[in-house]
Image (cartoon, rainbow, N blue to C red; front, side, top):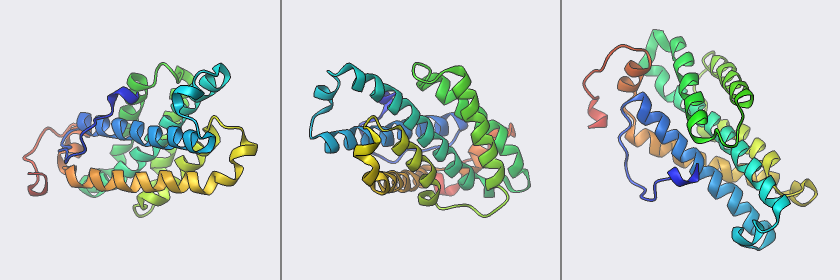
Length: 212
């Protein structure tokens, strides 16, 4: 998962469903790394290499990072749906199924070692329900959406709750901050009409002026 993160932070053109899914997967991994590893380091004052020598912690950490990744990725797909919906216009409802399919594909590719098939299926069903609810109202802010994954990242942390219970708000705020940054990066490279055309099988069209 984490090996897929791109070191260079640059404007990335996102003009296909595949490029969008890759972008969201990479940024979900980045948010997970910064949040989970950063918190463990800060809370214990030890580097991860030292912490991983303790097998119970190492096992808990592996479970934590996969669950956190799935939670953050789910929120990122919710953000993406809101950005794509205007370009889909009257076909917005048709975005749900292909977005869920892409989400499941990312989990199957990047998180299969840590998330079983049943859990991946459940995650897809949860995203489907969230997208259907989201389409009944205006687009939500990325920071508000990230409250969901922030809370789930907190629950997944490999630190006993009695030591982390006072840190819940700061963990959620950290995920929100990173999610807002991701949303801005997504917006700068996004070609929504082309992604929507790809997702809905409309064929390709010329890139929008903003994406050139």
